[in-house]
Length: 220
Image (tube, one colour):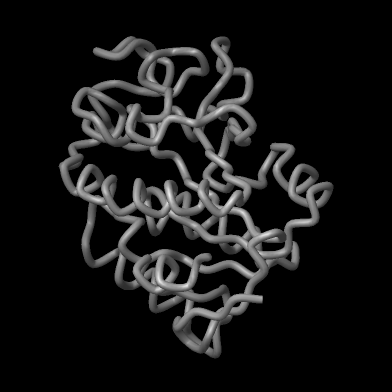
């Protein structure tokens, strides 16, 4: 077992039974012209965490740990995209519309791919999810169970939406999960900090949080 300094108390895990889960670092959210920008957001905030995730990803791969990438995505016919989701808000482009990188949040389109800096390698899991959470209507829980995974390290975007939802889903399914604070970001700075405080409150009611340097320091 490895122990790293975290909030609200030390996080102990066995790398052989732990997965690094990188949430939705896809072009539609991180790059200009994607869905995130059509909602009126400054995507440079999300781009800023890429180097930190790269360092963690390289170290985790070197440690032979399981890597999971998720993509929020939908079928081309939008059969798995509820009307309430597609019509929410007033973006310039909606899910399924054609944007600079192809159809927004549609599987197989250029904008739906993981950014090149964090591209999945052979053997790593790629989970396409139709909702905010990584476990909703996906095979993730099954894939983790059959690999003996009990602990999760989370990174990605956005902190208060897909990352937090996935952590809460993981908690409900019995996983111990830690959020890498500098490897996650929100379009709204206050939302990120508030989410981290909610996660670690009441003795870690949802999970743990720590800077990625604490993880890098203890990995073999």
